[in-house]
Length: 394
Image (tube, rainbow, N blue to C red; front, side, top):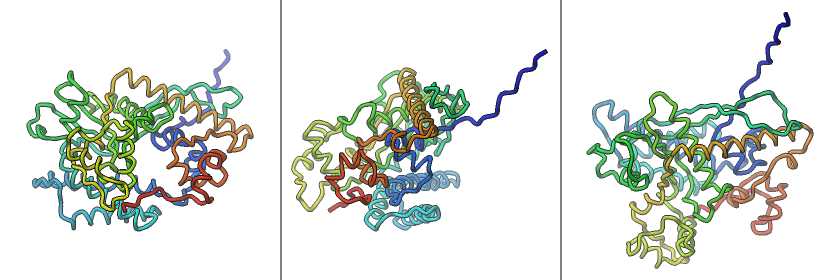
C-alpha cells in the first residue's frame, strides 16, 4: 500500500492591517525598506507623533479606570500636574525605544494635542470605553499569484490588528443622554440599532481629509477598509456585541495648526470638505473673516472641532465584503512584488510606488533616488534631504 507523504511544514504568512496593508498602500517602495527591510526612518516624525497620541490617551484612560476601581471616579479635565505627569511618562517610554520628537516645535504640538484629547475629548469618550488596545486575528485564503512569482507554499494568510478602543453603548442609558459622541453616532447610524451595540474607535494622528481625496488609492477609502475589517474580526470574538460601526478619530482636528486652518479655509471655499461650519454659526463667521495673513488664529468651538474629528463609518455585511476583497487584492500585490524581487528583480523595479500623498513623499528617505519623487516633487521642494512637514502655528 502506498503511503502518503507528509506535507512540508510552513508558517502562515501574517499581515498586519496597519503595518503591512496600509503601509504598502501608502507606498510599496517605502514599505519594502521600512517594514520588510527594517530600516528605521532618519526622521520618524509621523511615528513619534502617532505613538505619542496613542500612548497619552491609553494612559489617561487607564488612570480613569483605576479611579473607578478605587471607588472615586475621576473624569477629566484634570490638573496640569496630572497632565504633565502623563505626558512625561509617555515621552520616557518612547525614548526608551529610540523615538524622540524631532524638535521642540513638534514636541510642543504633540503636548498641546495630547492635552486637548484628554481634557476636551476624554470626558465624553472615556465613559463609553469597554476595552482598550483589543488585539484581533483572523485568517483568509491567500490569493493566487502568477506561478513565476510564487516564492513560498501557503494557502492562507493571517490578518492581525489592534483596535484602539471598543465601546459598549446602551441607547436607553440615562448617563449617556447628554453625551455628544453618542448623539452624533445615533444621528449618523440612523434607526434600527439594537438596544446595545459596539463601536470600534481608531485614533488617527492626522487632520480630516477632504472628500475630493476619496477613491481606491486615497487614505479616506483605505482607512474605511481598515475599520470595516476590524469590524469583521471583532464580530467573531466571544465577548462582542453587535458591531454597528466604526469611528475614525482625527486627533489633529481638536487642536488645528495654522496650516490645518489654511487648508480648511480652502476646502470650505471649494466645497471639498464634508464638515463645513454650520451656516450662520460663530465658527462660520470666524473662518469666513479670518485672513491667512492674520497673526492670530480663529477660535473654533469644541462642538465644531469634535464634528470634524469624528468620522462615523457604518459597518454592514456588504461593506465588510468590499473591504475584505480590497485587502485580499493588496496581499496579492505584496506577494507578487516579493516574488518578483526573489526572482532577481531590483527593488526599484519590483515594488510599486505611490506618490499621491505629497506629505508622505517629502519625509521619505527614499526620495533621493525614487523616480516618482524626482519627477513630481523635487522641483517644488528642492534638496535631497527628507524634510519635516509644516507644523508651525504662526
